[in-house]
Length: 210
Image (cartoon, rainbow, N blue to C red; front, side):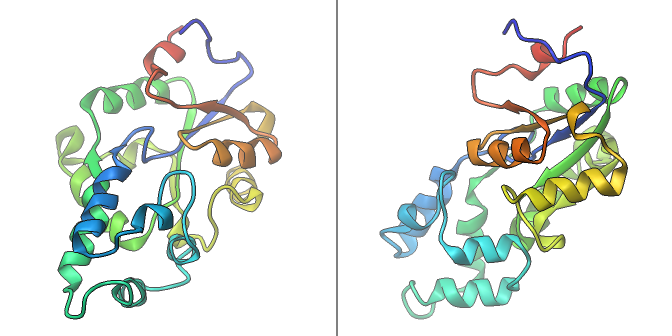
């Protein structure tokens, strides 16, 4: 990739899932189909999701309430553990080269994490990341970690980007936001941030190479 990071950038805000943490929505979609929700793909995907998932990502409903509502679409007697396993099926992990990338980017820029997530996913993600970087995880590499379910707001609403910038004294025009979902990037642009769409063809190491 020939494009390089703009010289005016002083701060980088990373999304987690799809940028640093590998995920596969099809795994969770198939897991819930197997449990009995045949139209699950129409309810939850990278492009769109039903209201229950938005509310869960904002922390407006608890894991218990989330499971209760999901159970309404499942066969009677479906266990909580089965729901959690299906819900977490999309989580794959952080490749080691992404950890090294963060260490290199951190030497030159202020870096933050901003993720749309929920308490069930977050608990599993933190557990999966714990062994990374000599059992330090990756949270310590960021100046601050922001998770939607603990903020009461989520991407792509402009308020979440404005909150991160205000709380940390960031200048939006000097800040780069990286995400794999187009509508999240649109929200960041509305808040004045520079954006990079992270697709499978985007090599972040090349983008940050001097």
